[in-house]
Length: 136
Length: 134
Image (cartoon, rainbow over the protein chains, first blue to last red):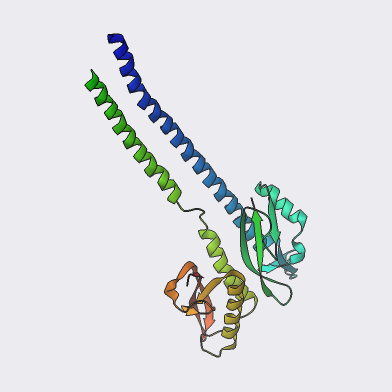
């Protein structure tokens, strides 16, 4: 009689403790998942920002020989030469940034979970345009 | 004995409720946290506007006087940028887009300060990008 009571009492004590432990594990798991997901999103976004900045300041800009130093070219940041936007250029950047997908498009947002744009000028008339950089 | 079990159960329930409330508070805090940190990107966009105007040569002989041709061209360009991006642009506190005239009702994106040669001397001018929330 006394033994049965002890078992019953023990059961009532262990059950809430187990539930609390399970909830704690679930909460820790959710917190970790959320932190990892947030970090991944920020990483992809930061990579796109870097790629866009590199493209409008160096990779895709109009450059010309000024003759001051042999081989030295003068670059014009934010003045984009559309002919430099090639599949190879995009693929090289995608590989370097270790992204699953990347598109650089001067007309419309391409494929990708995240898209940003930069304000640039294009052509000899320096028309105002946008350069879209999308990826995931 | 029965009274002891009831007491223990009550303690367990109170502990569980306390724990669940802390858990709810913590998880709620996560949901409320802002998404991406895009502060650098916003400053880059603001700098883009400045750079584009430089490239188009609109700061040559620029002044804030009405009727000043470079100023009119800057305003026209800002209208174009507004059409492309939906962003309002303020230069030196002056509204230069088709956005609402009330500076206070637009949500600021970023501000930068740049030097321009105006009225025969170099002046610092603030360029601000904002979202029209009217």
